[in-house]
Each structure stands twice: as C-alpha cells, then as structure tokens.
Length: 125
Image (cartoon, rainbow, N blue to C red; front, side):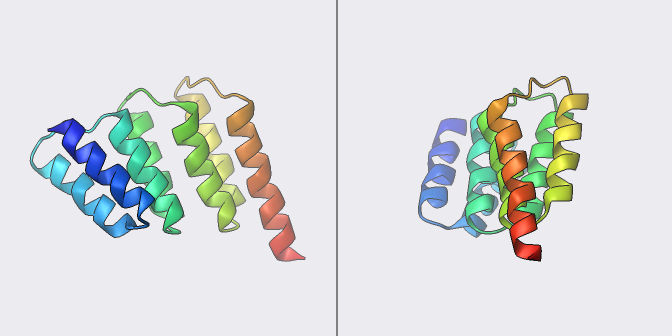
C-alpha cells in the first residue's frame, strides 16, 4: 500500500539510496499503488541527495501537471537541487511552472531560487 512504499522510499532517501527510491516509486506506478504528495516529496528529496536534479525537476513537473497537492517544501527541494548543481535556469523555469499552476510561492521557495542563482555565480568565479 501507499504508506508502506512511502516509508520504504523515505528510508532510501535517508540512507542515500536514490536509485532504490526511484525503483520503489516506479513499482508503485506499475502496480497502480497511489503515488501521493508524500511519495513524490520523498523521492524528489532522494534525487536531490543523490545529485539527480534533472529527475527531481521532472518529478516536480509531473506533480504540478497532475494537480497533486504540491507543498512548498517539495518544490523548494527541487529548486534547491537545481541550485546545488549550478542549474539556476532550471530553478527559474520550475518557479515559472509552479506559478502557472496556481501554486502559492512563498519566501522558502524564493530563498531556494535565490540560493540557486548565488551558487551558480560562485561556480562561475
């Protein structure tokens, strides 16, 4: 069930096992177990921890397009994942996607985006 998979994905996230987290998430979808906001949030965080910013952005985009309840922490995690790897343009695109999806953007999300731009600026110097 969803809670069992979410627990397993969260454990993978905490253990730095982003590949396994993605595998559990894929199995959920294949077996038609409901993927909820907690599922997405945990796997997005696992991707961020594993340096897979592209996958974090992709998953966040899927959440927005699916009209799942998207919280600030999950979005900020994806935006921050972009920043950690100097992908500030992706962070801005994600912000635009969130805004177009009528998501409430707050100081946490904007701080993550600003941090992304700052991180990118430090890398260029």
